[in-house]
Length: 151
Image 1 (cartoon, helix red, strand yellow):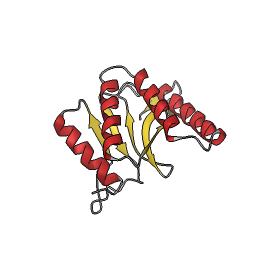
Image 2: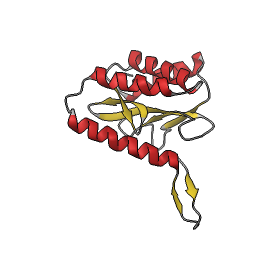
Image 3: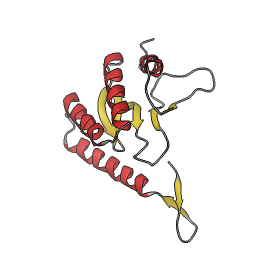
């Protein structure tokens, strides 16, 4: 996420970043009100967010959702800063950021510090996505399984 110059030359949050922060605040308020919210509530919220996306992000997000559900069923769908995310024990493990949301040239599949992706002293946690082929899908399946300790 980038910063935007204001008239005074001071860097501030972009409109997209402010919108994401508002969505996160709303997510936290909703979670407090319904602390017993079920996995299906999270799933319907994620599917609604995905349906709002334009192609090709929507198609990638739908495919990622299916891959994550099939390969890491321990993860619960939820939103995180207005993005589809997947959590274990209440902690986000991975998320999808649409290119359109932040006006970037590629979508992102990201992993939090809760993901078990550690490899030595340095490893990637975010991956740029332009499209999903069977090659990328295979890599994502392996990453998601490793992230939740299934490898």
